[in-house]
Image (tube, rainbow, N blue to C red; front, side):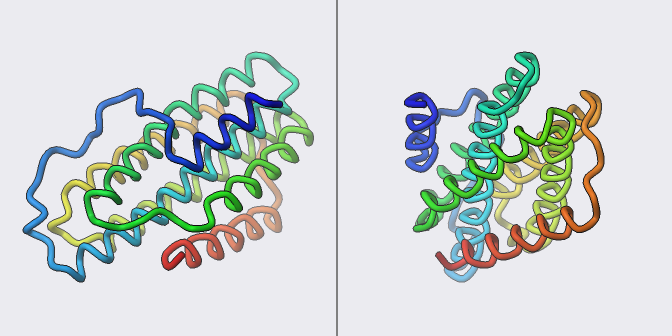
Length: 202
């Protein structure tokens, strides 16, 4: 139990180090106007919240998974999501922004969802993982359309995140994840919309 608490605190504090180099090449911030920097910082804050939730979901699913191999799968995915957490935090700092004030609440809520998904059974938990990653991939695609064209560093981070999320979804399906009912998928989209709208400002 203490290990999960420690991971939660590290996630909320963005203290999980990246295991891979940041994909963003050096670039001059002088290319961005003040308004563009503000928009990029807000979008990257939303993405950072998404990574806080991803860590929490995978922690919860790993804690309640019945199969040792599946627990390891969730932990491996969490390592890549930890890279995203570190990269988005770095980018927010570069842009002069801040992370969400509600990160402890985001983590707690997502951890609870991860526990519930895990207790519903391994195939359901994998299906939940696949659907989550598909929705995140679409969300990131929307951010690529909204980010300022000159913000190459943010774009590079988001593009790598999108590729990783797609790989996680494919792995979950390959391991036996089942499709979730339409009402569940709709509820997930609604919850994500509330989170992203709130995190844009808070």
